[in-house]
Length: 380
Image (tube, rainbow, N blue to C red; front, side):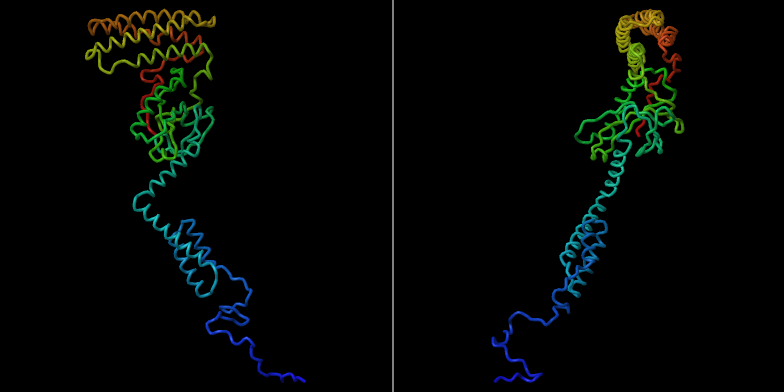
């Protein structure tokens, strides 16, 4: 007969003996740091914040401080997130090093300029195309980082008449790009505004150019513009007179007139007294161009109302052509200028005005220096 031990008696010894002294540590109903077994371990909030700050690299110093505080709290509380805190602190240290390098090398200003130019080329300026009109809040003479596209029918600061795309490769330099812009924009303006007599006075050629920094962002466009040289003056209506707005008769006439104007603008810079040979050669070139344009005018079928005015104009051009031929063979300066003056007397004369009226083109000759070929190009 076995008798149960009285209440409160000692627990019988473990038949397997006591656990070894160096064996695994055992706990009571509570685990380390007083947590009951099975309770989830929380993640330290500062450790998460340190990782976020480290990844963003926005406030690297703050990320480092938060990461160190998170490690101290984890050691005291037993929370998880030690790896997060360490990662955030390391990333913050890297961010601090990068900021130091950027500030010490001056790259910060370059990054900011790149941002501005990138924004400029990412907004309306980049999307400007031939035929667009816009207002420039900063003015055409300033840094045009932003523009407001507006209808050409109303008043506006500028009108795009050409976009020239440069080839890739290394940045050619501001001076080189400016030279290209001056050459290309000047040459292309008459293709957009063929009727130079219709150009308002004081309209100049401007251009938007890629900078050294925007070049790195893929900016390769030179944007050629028409605009007034006066700051507060605005264009009214489109200046476009090309095959998209003109009829065939008008295009043929203006093509011949502009070809002759181009030849006349090639007059040598030195005076005839200093270089008579150059002037005689130039007179010969004008003579040849006149022959080509006379042939084009005679070969075109003109409407009934324009046949007589165009025939009269061709006669004047024939007389002028003969004077240019004589000027090209002049033996002295006085003889040269005698034929030169007679040849120029027929340029934009009464016959030209009558022909223009018959073709419904602008019929008021531009004043001297106001022929729609503004040469005071300015970089924007």
